Amino acid sequence: MDATDEGSGVASTWYRWRTPQYEWYCDEPFWVSGDGIHTLEYFSIDRANNREDIKKCIIKIDTTPPVTTHKFDGMIVEGCFIDDVTVSLSARDVTSGINYTMYKINDNFFFVSSERCFP
Image (tube, rainbow, N blue to C red; front, side, top):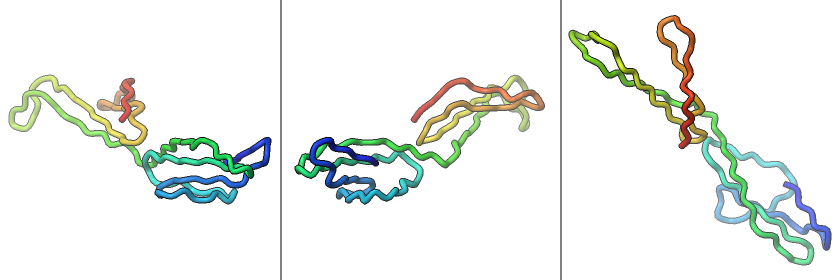
């Protein structure tokens, strides 16, 4: 984070992430980690004691792959489908959503579902 002030100069910068209190930023990088949507809040104060409005930055971290489940719908006799089967795929990703789902039937090429879904 960089702060500038054309008048008296920047005295300090403060930030808050995962804590109720603001912490002094000492010009050293810090890590934001863990899957999920994180909110970073920050502001600076100049040497004349003027405080800027609090700014917010949303940081999305998603290192977990989505989960896809399937459902078959059709007539079953003695453990086998006896007619066409409707296959439904349902994908879920709570942080960044689903961009697309790929599926393959037998040795055919992969097919792509073009629907985009977001949490």
